[in-house]
Amino acid sequence: MSRSLLIITSVLVFSFAGLAQNTRNLTPLEIEIAKQQQRLSSGSDEERRDAVMRLGSMRVRIASRAALPGLKDPSPTVRASAAKAIHWMGEEERVSALLPLLNDKNEFVRREAAYALGLTRSRNATAALSERLTKDKEAGVRGAAAVALGEIADEAAVVPLVSTLSRDKNEFVLRAAAVALGKIGSHAGTAALVSVLSNEKLPNDVRREAARSLGLIGDPSAESALRAASTAEDPYLSRIAFESLKKISRR
Image (cartoon, rainbow, N blue to C red; front, side, top):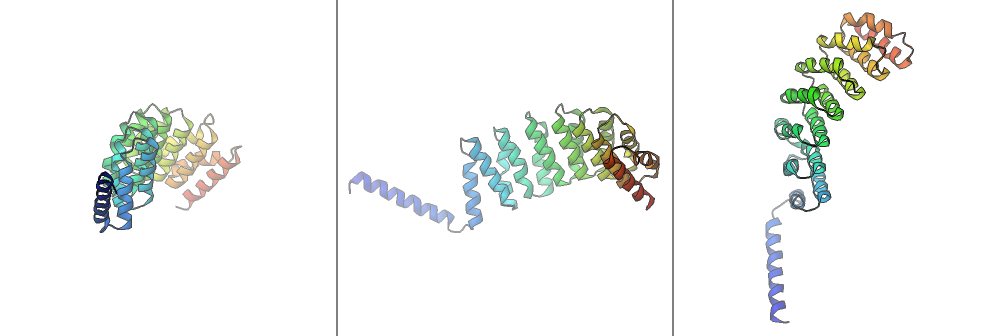
């Protein structure tokens, strides 16, 4: 064996020995997390995205925390994937990490951050989500913010949701806002939902969700509008209105 080959062989032996020493006391989970963390330094967007997704799929807090650098990745797809991957961290940890993404330049990232914030169920996200609902130029982001506000079910979101029902023109956003008001369950949303339900120019699926939400809220002042909708030509709308009337009468 030549001297140079002997030196290379010795270096490799010591390198592997050091690696074994470093991983000897780690659990298989910790080893896998370390492997995915290393992949986050890859020059490939797709590899970094895959690493973030794998960390999220482990469904443990330490893996979610390892995915945090992905929230600041240059690639929008990595940032959006990281918003989901940190789901297994504590509620307020997630809120703090996700809120900056609501101002991301990329629509996809803002949308995924909004959905992820909804899953935290934290009222600390209400104000920022309400701002996206009323000010974001992209309908996908506004719709995601409405969905998230429904998941959080904070009564402080009623005003921006009501405003959305009267001003927004996008069908998905209107439907999501109507659903959110039903989940919140405040009587303060009744008048806006009645207005939507009674507006025959609006898409039927938006009116259906308004009828469903009025049943969840249970405000007797909605009975007249629901009774009128129970005879609508759309069979789905009439059925939902009828079921909502029954819910109110049982209260």
